[in-house]
Amino acid sequence: MRAALEEANRAAARDEVPIGAIITDEKGGIVARTGNKTRELSDPCAHAEILAIRTACESINSQRIPNYTLYVTLEPCAMCAAAISFARISRVVFGASDQKGGGILHGGEFYTQPTCHHKPSIQHGLMAEKCGEILKAFFKRKR
Amino acid sequence: MRAALEEANRAAARDEVPIGAIITDEKGGIVARTGNKTRELSDPCAHAEILAIRTACESINSQRIPNYTLYVTLEPCAMCAAAISFARISRVVFGASDQKGGGILHGGEFYTQPTCHHKPSIQHGLMAEKCGEILKAFFKRKR
Image 1 (cartoon, each protein chain N blue to C red):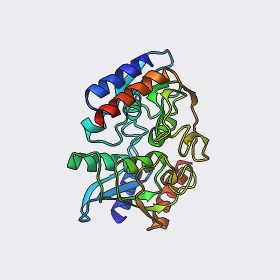
Image 2 (image 1 turned 120 degrees about the vertical axis):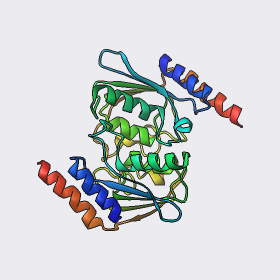
Image 3 (image 1 turned 180 degrees about the vertical axis):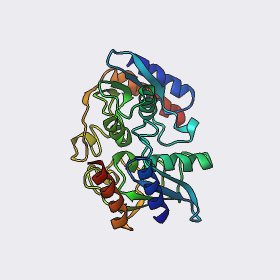
C-alpha cells in the first residue's frame, strides 16, 4: 500500500484525482503500478485499477490474472470492481472507503450480486487515513 | 443498431464474444464503432462499450461526451454501465437484455444507486432478437 500511496501522490502532482494502484503476482512482486490518468489520457475509464489490470494482463498475455493481488488507495468504483472480477484477481486490498462512489461496500455492492461470477477476497482499511488524506487535501486545493 | 450488429458479427469472426457498440455524436454521425476485443488485446476491460468510449473521448480530447448516444447489442455490464455514466453519455440504446451479467436492468442496477452521479436515458429491446441470436449461436458453437 505504500507503493500505491506513492502512485497516488504522483497522480496529484499531475493534477489527477490522487488514487494509486499496485498489482502483485503470486510471489508478491509488483507487476503493475500506476495512478489515475483520466485527464492525461482523456479517458473516463483510465482509473488506476483499470490501467494496472491492463498492464498486468498484458505482462502475461492473458485476460485473467488469478493469484494476483490488487492494492488500491480508495475503494474501487462499480466499473473497477467489475473489471477486477473479470480479471479473476484473487485478492483486493483497499485503503479508504468511498461512500460517494464505491462499488464494493457501497452502491450496487457488485460482489454480492448474482451477476458477479468471481468474488475476490477483500481487505480494507489498510493505511486508510493516509489514503483518504491525500484525496481530501487534493479536493480542498481544488475548491 | 444495424452497425452495432455488424460489429458483433465481426467480433464473432475474430472468435470474440459477439457484442458490438457504436457511439454517435449530437448530429447522429458515428464517431466510434467496435466489437469486443478481450481476447485479441488480452484485456478483460476491452468490452465493446469501453473501447468505443475511449475512441469517442479521444476524438474530441475530452473525458466527457455529453449529447452522444451509445448503441450496443447487449445490455451493458456493471463495468460498462459505470463507464457510460463517467463519460456523461446522454443516451444508451441496447438490444438484448442480459440476465446473467447485465448491470442496468440486472445486478446492482448502477443507475438506480446513490453512487451514480449521471444517469443516461435508456432504451432497450431494439432488434433484441437479432442481437441475442448472434450470442446464442456463438456459444452454441463453443459447446
